Image (cartoon, rainbow, N blue to C red; front, side, top):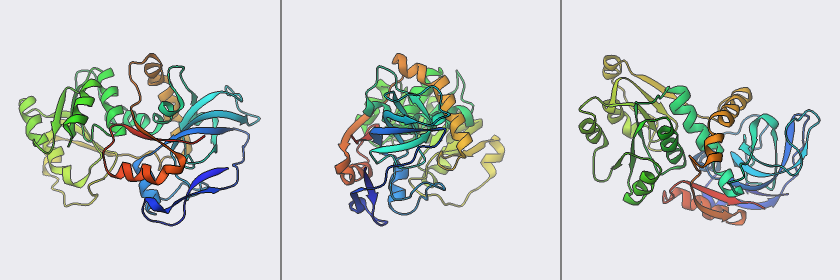
Length: 327
């Protein structure tokens, strides 16, 4: 089968389309013909040699999510049959024509979605839900600040938050992205090139702050995030695009009785990922099927243009997800 292979750590140019062995299907596994996969920031780190694959997953073929058609199922698989349209999380390997995954890591694609839309969903919607609902216990009537609101996680988080009845603040360096985010339910758009987000939040909330901050930036935003949180507020980090180290003054954390969480999906055990997928099926899939929340696909590249797709991701021009069309 064809796959986009990382030939050595480096820039987008290190990808080559190569023929590799087909994966083997175990008793509880499903073999899928991949129709589409989607890019994630973790893929760029893996390409640079800075994001190790889980044990048993080859490190030279990225791809943390996919959509496709079931080709074969293991003897213990229930609920999936050859020909079914499915999508789901992967430990890696999504940039290939075929993947094998456990039956509990996938779901049937709703009839209102095509393969490209379906492939753009699992990683960001599960990440966002886990961060703001599981970790931070965000509830109706509260408020949340979502950084990089035009990113895949950001566009998912703002829709999930609005479905919960939460007031949403969001940052971006682009007025165009903020306008798109308002169409998804963003209440207070903040262009960080023009305004200090902590000052906007202080003014809007009468110095009370927001209940939850969802951050993908890290160190550069730390102190303003802490300043923006309410008493007993919660900060969850799902990325550190701006840096991961700094000197911390614990004073405000203690005075405000804040809670700080850090989370990534890839480090989770297989049982944890399976549980998250089942939670996704229960809580989010009905909203997606009904159109109340929706995947946001910015641009689609063929597998042969995977290097161009990575260049585009690293330009930060996308609103929502970048997708690879595989077969």
